[in-house]
Length: 440
Image (cartoon, rainbow, N blue to C red; front, side, top):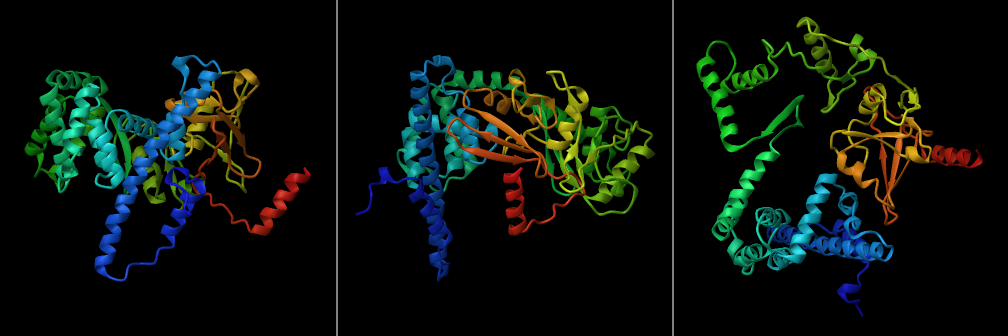
């Protein structure tokens, strides 16, 4: 007899995953289309089940911490970061997943049911949650009922149309809440970058409506008057004008801003094809790196060369230690080069803080071995009871192992420096290394 659904454990869920991987391809076009549709519904059902388990995790953690005497205001801290690790996501994404689960389970039962049945994808459910977050539970529940009580309402509706409809209903139910949200959103204005393909970077600015349109209109007006004077397109003139106006440089090739490029000497001085690394961006081709250095020198900008050393076999960068509690500037720079982003697994957030794996209060050294670059949210989460980080570099590059309050461990290995390639290790060699470690 099959076990009830409620008694299905982790092993049974893993078996379902294995069975999907072993599924034979469809025998006809119609069958393939049906399978694609059902598999999409399964993905949605899994998202709904994850929401249930996320809230159950919070319930169990709060019960345990309450029994242990943890103050109510501190109960459940760090849970979003744990959920992020389980879902192989960044810390900020973990916060969104946690808020999403809380909304579905506490205030939006129809959306949760539509997601569980596969009638609504996880992204479309997130649109509903996101665009009703500023409303009272009562108004949020009303939109939940109007949109998802009858799933035929969302059939054939695109994501943008769904977004617009939820916003319309929100304004209809509580106009002042929408106005207040718009006013509050101005405090969230910011500028950010994301790597783009082919040595490009995507610069984004989240601005108030009038400011954003004014910036774009000004750049467009300049391009309208300039295009035709050289070989640049309208879009290229706008992009160059943005760079020149923000930096104050006469041309885009004479920028007085430091860009950290890490590259082997054989790339800088020779013709090696090994990739270089730009801090905050990622790997770039050797020719591109040499061109960047050459352009900086030709533009008569201030260029600085800093030498870094690595271990020949593992490629581990070698750095300095400090007796101070706070990480000195040179060590921070080294950690930026070595770690490249937050050292918590799956988190690509920029490094904002520098943390001791073994806390300084317990004798942890302020050193490269015991230090890690961290984003703000993960550095805060790591300070909560039950979190632990250990580091190791004896067998290769710097390795950080993070253990969460549930006992789950996640390993993060520092990326290889530019130009280094690990030599493959055979199973026999791994066994010999393990035996040598045990004998030591």
